[in-house]
Amino acid sequence: EMGHALVTYYTPGADPVHKISVIPRGFGALGFTMALPKEDRYLMTRRELLARIDILFGGRVAEETVFAEISTGAQDDLQKATDIAKRMVMEYGMSEKCGPRTFSSERSSFIQASSGPMSFQKEYSEASAEQIDLEVKNILDAAYSRVRNLILLKKDMLIRFAAILTEKEVLESRDFEQLIENYERTNGQLISIESLPPKAESAEAEKEKEGSEVFSAPPATTEPGTLLTDL
Image 1: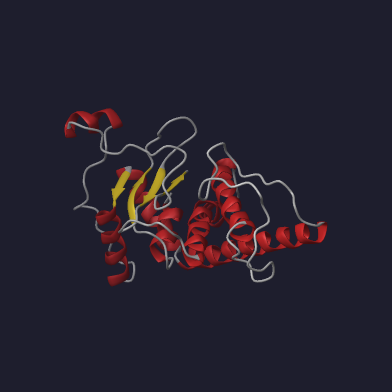
Image 2 (image 1 turned 45 degrees about the vertical axis):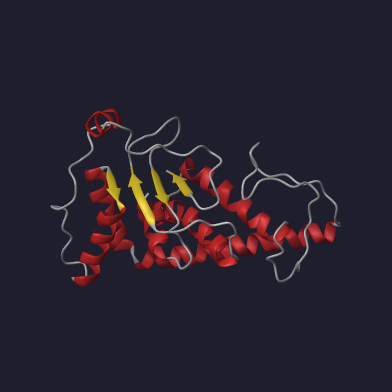
């Protein structure tokens, strides 16, 4: 999760980090990183879509960088990143080589179809299909390379912040930003966690203490302005 969070913080066009958690929430979700927009959003630019792909790759690249191994944990993130790249090329005309045209006749909801992974009725030549595949691959490869360079640059921060997140279990945006500010101000010599809130006891304990649920993860189909990455 810290990989997602750091990529979110340092990627231009990304929404601010709202909360990071390693408390399991539901089947198959070991944690989440939530980013929320500062204002209502009705459209997304190419830079913002690329930022989303970068963020989705953050967990996989962090895992590969720290452990020199990859697992099945990033399967959902990879699916979402691939869907965004396909839509950029096939629906939004955001490919220089394929040009300002669409390659699908069926319209579906923004970014993610409600029924699951996107699918298109083929209405183009084999040559165009090969060009689409190449453009999608180029978008994803370029994003993975950007994220790998960033994670390598921030590897010490990643490892130390991940240890803090493991201890605290939940970091709010102000706590996360404080850690980064302290780290950068002291060149990594001082990371203070004394001022952070105590370790969360459990989701039920949070509900009892606050009188209401501290955070309720949004459904699988989220609004365009909300990015939720599961570990």
